[in-house]
Amino acid sequence: MSKYIFVTGGVTSSLGKGIVGASLGKLLQARGLNVTIQKFDPYINIDPGTLNPYEHGECYVTDDGAETDLDLGHYERFLNISTSQANNVTTGRIYETVINKERAGDYLGKTVQVIPHITDEIKRRMRLLEEKNFDVIITELGGTVGDIESLPYLEALRQLRMELPSSDHVTVHLTLVPYLAAAKELKTKPTQHSVKELQEAGIQPDILVCRTEHELGDEIRAKLALFCNLKPENVIEAIDADTIYDVPLMMLKEKLDLRVMDKLKIPVLKEPDLRNWKIFLGHLKNPSEDVTIGLIGKYNELPDAYKSIYEAFVHGGAANECKVNVVAVHSEDIESDQDAKKKLKEMDGILVAPGFGERGVEGKILAIKYARENMVPFFGICLGMQCAVVEYSRNILKLSNAASTEMDKNTSDPVIDMMHEQKKIKNKGGTMRLGAYKCKILENSQAFEAYGKEQIMERHRHRYEFNNVYRERLEEAGMLASGINEEKNLVEIIELKNHPWFIGVQFHPELKSTVESPHPLFVDFIKHCMLYKNKQ
Ligand code: GLN
Image (cartoon, rainbow, N blue to C red):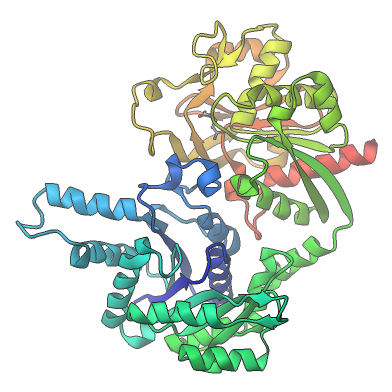
């Protein structure tokens, strides 16, 4: 029987429910419990795969090919576990299931309603992971208490709390305690109101986690406890942190894990083993070197669009005891070789980001040309790899029209082209090449040196592929296809023979980088950026 931790949020969005949930999960895991974490999102999209990064940040992809909310990335990075389709559910998905059942006649002529049919489906999904025998399932409810679209989730939560034994569930409410500079005071009223809102829905939170810019102090804790109907020890302070990776230790200090275990009647058998986490933090905070890496993308005003890449740099940097300064360079600002030189001459490495559509692609290609010609370490991810193939075809093979058919349907040299099986697909949602695929790495390659093994599994999210018609010509000219999916005969990794570190990957390595297993390609890339910097 699994125990449930529900995490709700009040007052504002972006308080970091995902980070608090993941931190709590980390502490329980470090105490020897088998933990997973799931998120329910209140929007009507079936999944965030069709959402523009401006709307919702990066789309995170799981091994089983689910396109999910970026909080799942935090769960994986903190807990070092792999999540799945069942770990992220949207309102759209809930309604889709209910409506399909209605069309199939499963409701036997009944009127289909939010209560009980939608709430039953929410509860079923909340309990789906029970099958896998986790000790603890953390369920984050997206959105903010008081939103119209959150209501069915709160109602389902109310029902579930009635159905489960009291020691099998705990509700943690994350809220904001703002500081009014003019009054020099922390204000508790917004929290009181958001707890009242929860109580109106029939839910008394067991623990309050308060985001704040200043220490709460005993008086504020007591006041919050009194007004929100809680024991003072169940008011937890979550003060702003230097890095999200500090939050587990801050929550440990505040005893959030012990408060939760107390309510769940889980015996405290050992102190949490956070040795690896602390070693990582030590490296992160005491780097002995630093490098500057240009991230060439088109959503640079919005770091959430490249969340996993930024985090993979943090993990890979710590592994090298090196601080990585990531400089976002807008690909649309690079229109010529001179622009590329001007924008990139201070960089010790260049990463060209994933992406979709034509906007900004020519700037990416110019950045790659600069990295290739100047022997600057280059890392291309997905579209970044495809652009590297286009660049090489145009400038080395002299195929001046070379392009991806995503950007130029009628190009005479489609060096990147849509897979045959993709051509007949009309629907946009969930139809790309998604999830984990095997890849075999060639020995004596830069990629092999980074991974140190032949067989890898990496996650994909794209429609277009390296066109094998051009493989022989490209290889003769010095580009090496160093990673292959043998089942589908697809090129997954390319590199350059006459360059110290130039790797493009069709997959998304950033999605598999965690605190405890930094991704080998990021670790090796940063290492070569350090070498490059020291040589200059
Ligand atoms: N737009 C490209 C494709 O669909 C690359 C996608 C990506 O970078 N994730 O193949």
